[in-house]
Amino acid sequence: MTGKDIICILVAYLLGGICTGYYLVRFKAKLDIREQGSGGVGARNVGRILGKPGFVVTLLGDSLKGLVAVALARKFDLADPAVSLALIAVIAGHIWPLPLQFRGGRGIATAIGAYLAYDPALALLLLGITAVLMVFRRGFILSGLAAFLLLPLVAYALEQPGHTVAALAGASVIILFAHRERIRRAFGEELPQREA
Image (cartoon, rainbow, N blue to C red; front, side):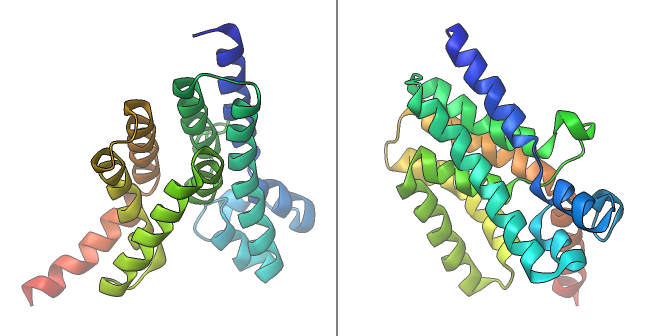
């Protein structure tokens, strides 16, 4: 790995750490979004405070930084494995941002933006899997999380390069980790229903 690779991966992490929702709520409402609602810095929680415009701006801002981070890695002609690391780095930066003492968001919007720049077909595949899963289970978030989990397996089946499969798997692991409480609650709510 070259010095240029390391710098671009570091820049991707730092870009990820610019959590749109946190700064938007600080500017508009003089509040720490992490102390409000669900405690997340993502679009849904921002929408609770700033309404639909806050939701949209946060969603677009978080997606855009994911896209820009990976696009920059491509622009500087990084080797494909280094671009894959930049993808993971921008998502990790959003979830564990240095400026916010590692208390950030949960990474879905940033990941979608990063996937669009990394390989638009993979981003569309992710959204397609999510849509199919929503037919069987209501709820965009849980269907989306399942899609993130399945995407590396689909990429492997489609004979994508090893670094791509590894990047998708790495992104899935950290996104699922960031959503661990939501997943725990979802399964906790379902178990009694199955027993009844």
